Length: 355
Image (cartoon, rainbow, N blue to C red; front, side, top):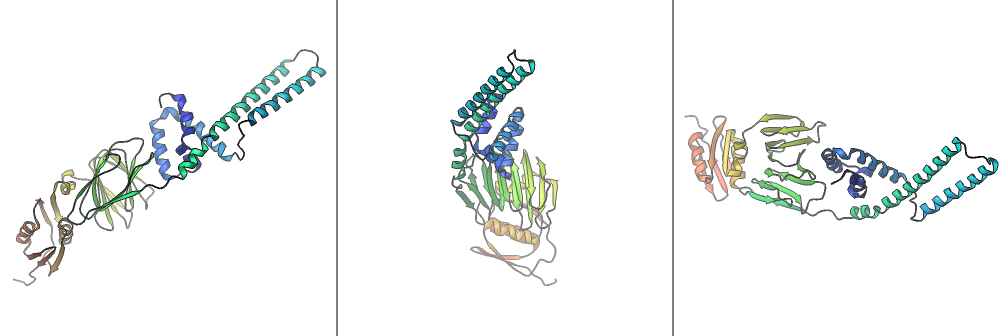
């Protein structure tokens, strides 16, 4: 908006604003609250526009285009009749009180004309709202990666998402004018194009992450744990199990337990979080179960284990673009086990006999 006086007509002519005032929902609240924050000079016009929409919402009969002229004619005719009666009963000039009364009537006439004109002009926008309400729902696209596969996806707005193995991304074929919404399961890295008028909302399990323009990763470690790691910018995270939102700054990571609804915010190393994107299989004090799950997901294999480790694993190491055989060789040397690889099936054999 270039000029402040244009805000009122812009809002009244905007079907999404009318729908927000009449039937508010969470999505519309997010968009219009962000719009209001970005246009503080329009506060008075927003209040006026809301009042007009609510008044029109309660109006049961909208005057037809010719009604305002009929109403005005009745007021003028009645006023002339009263004026003649006054002159007959009081031939002298009008008193100060009479002159004040006449001005009040003129003001009433002008007010009636303005109200009728405003209601008629506003009514002409109603068909636009109805047409928008009948718009078919957007077509959603699903991208899925199998174990051992990674994928880069471009969103309709130009944002880029990298999917790790065994992950899924859903997004609309085209974003609407209010919001950019996507859904993710597994692990993904986001580079979001800034758009103050259309924030992005990323749904992942019980969490919803709100962003404008930033980079971050979302990881579903298992059915209970989720992580949001913010590389740059700022995000707001909400949970279905909590009334309190969490704000993250760059370098902060939220770990969330979906069973309890509890979360913890901590610092993290970006290089470790993004290692998978660079082709690095990274372990930091990983348990045996964590290692097996990671190998299955990274290489797309099925692990069969015979026996069990003689001690608790706390494996640390990194393997960049290395094949499975070489990775298992190094692990077998450190943790003492035998292995065989048969296509997509891997067998691990631990010697459980005491020396």
